[in-house]
Amino acid sequence: MISGLSDGLSDIDRMLMRDTGMNLLTLGFRAIGADASEVDVKRFKAASVPITSGLGIIGGFSRSVADIVRDMGIDCFVTEHTDVWGFGEAIDRGADIILMADDEQYMAYSVAAGRYANNSFCTAAGYVEALRGAVGGLQGKEVFVRGAGRVGSNMVSLLCAQGARPIVADVIREKAEAVARANPGATAAEDLEEATAEAGLILNASPVPIPGDLIREGAVVSTPGIPHVYDEATLRKAKFIHDPLAIGTAPMVAQCIIYTMDKEREQ
Ligand code: 2YJ
Image 1 (cartoon, helix red, strand yellow):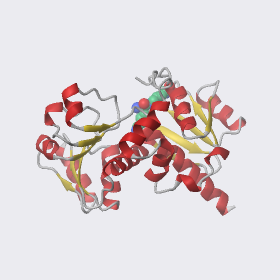
Image 2 (cartoon, protein in one colour):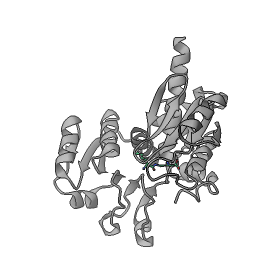
Image 3 (spheres, rainbow, N blue to C red):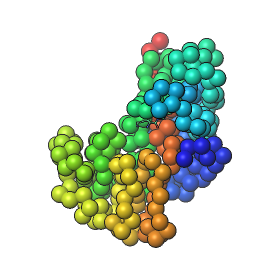
């Protein structure tokens, strides 16, 4: 799934411009509440480190990450070494930002700031921003969040902060209720399928595609995660915003740049 990404990356900006009105760089910064036009991204250098632990290397993952960072106009190399040695190599070769993922965590580390951006929050932020761009603002709008895990709960908080009205549902109903309680302005749906079928704006934070017959005609679905294969009829019914890696990665890079610049201002 990831390995084909390197070849078609220039398509990401085209897809995002068409669906959200923003390119990847703009989206990444807006997702974290910053403005890319005020930042000289070209002075930063990034490294992508292959990590062998757990299930091991995913063919093309670290290369695709580097391609995404380059698509944002930032120099990025893949380290020759993996793991701890690769991290050291990234620092030795002057990387300001180091990206790496094992099976549980995908992070971007700001060397100067000693802080990292994590993929769960940034995926939530990227897809909320993509949806905002697609529909011209979220204030006062009802948005259905399907899934109340790490990404879904962050989406709900971000939506509340923007004045949207999130409705959250999860196969484990208590999880959705806990997220709604923690975020004033959010509500938990009574029924996962009913709420899906009624929704006009959907953020799918669950690890599975939404069954096509549940999606309403004209819905906008912003959907991270595993590649979501929808049939032709479903694709005709709704507008989908999805890519396997870039929308979640761009805000991580943007966040690290902001961390680095904050640190520079302190000094
Ligand atoms: O370096 C490699 O090739 C691999 N170690 C990459 C592993 C990529 N990891 C994932 O895709 C995890 N599911 C990341 C979890 C992120 C949580 N938002």
